[in-house]
Amino acid sequence: VADWCYKQIGKPYNYNYFNTGTRSSFYCSHLVWAAFKDKYGIDLNTDAFKAPVGNPIHPSELVSSSKTFTVYTK
Image (tube, rainbow, N blue to C red):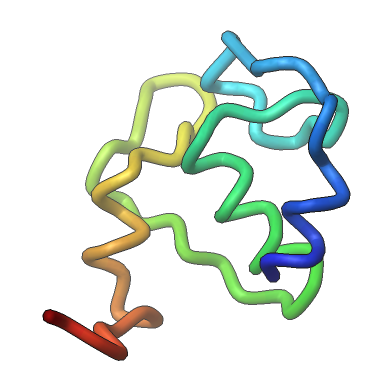
């Protein structure tokens, strides 16, 4: 996933949070979500921040998804 994200360097910021289908620009949590979705088919999105139109990826969803867990804490 990190390598996939690294390959996206140089693409512009995606100010349209509802357009998660684009891969030509990203916002922070959209980048991480897209990497897992495209590379492994893992959808980290939840219904916690469901919008009337579209389904933006909120950063806290990446943490609270049932598909993620803490590997290390200090």
